[in-house]
Image (cartoon, rainbow, N blue to C red):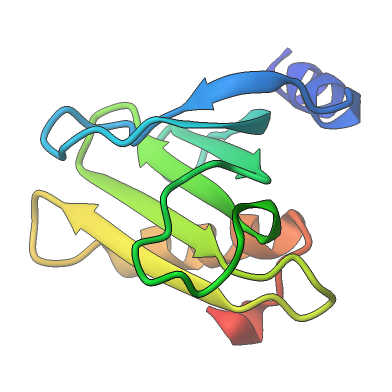
Length: 128
């Protein structure tokens, strides 16, 4: 069912939605944009969302808002939260990665899965 729901969500056109960092341990930053979400189940349940064309404030003014979107990954058990910020939605986007975690670093298998999910949504692994 989760796979079917994932495919359904990925097939739907984007809709306006509020995106936010998925952890109360971090100061919340709300964004508005076209939200696409789906779930991954290895090695722990992971929720992933892409907030495209977000209105996330760019304090360094590197890109205009329309040229930004963010991919958010977080676990249900909140052992870690990963936030990818895409600064350019061109053919070779530049990706900034921020990892928030309760431990010093995510397990190697978790990192491998994050990379896998990252590439499945069309982002270039070499840009991580």
